[in-house]
Image (tube, rainbow, N blue to C red; front, side, top):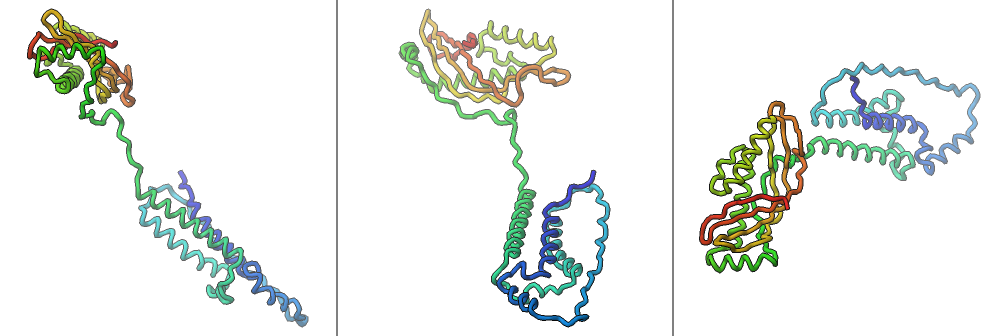
Length: 311
């Protein structure tokens, strides 16, 4: 596939060639300086036979060699070729049009003409584009990390208590002087992370003693059904946004607390053999909200997860 031409170098070379062509008529560049000379030349009568127009010799520019596809050159060679092109272009114009390099400045450089200003603006613009191009090559774009590989939020959000649950929490604190709502929030948050990790490992039995037996059997049955269907479920990259106590009470020698978790996580299902995504998204987290019912016998005993509900 042919390599795309460098438009910056082509424009620079074309501008310098046009500048060399127009410099043979200095009146176009500096009207105020060269106009008297042209008027004097017009008023002078030349003797017949002394004027012989010179036919410019035809110059043929050799054809460019065929361009072969190649890998991109390093940044240093690109900048070197740009500088060398800017230096060689005036020499090329000199040999093509046959005027000395000092011919440009023999009448001074001030005041500048319109062509001088246009040439300066073109050179500044091309230099700015080349600078932006080189700086863009030196600074590769930053790779965005997919949300799946971002770490889990380490901080536990503060536990909040609804107004209707505050009397029940006060009753639990009256029976257990060491009950601390903040410590309770950290405990249930840790249980939430451990349960999701056990679900991803398909090892729910490791939660025995922290989850009620009936709920433990229900979760194990769900894993067996997914195994028979050659599927595997994942709950990853959880970002917990809030923990709220929605209900609390003391009844029949037991203490009950209902906690609402809400946040975002990656919830998806893969095929075991091919790894094909069957459900959910591996890149975009989805919102979740769960209500956990915890209980314990009256006294200072660990809390046990009794049920998980969506609402």
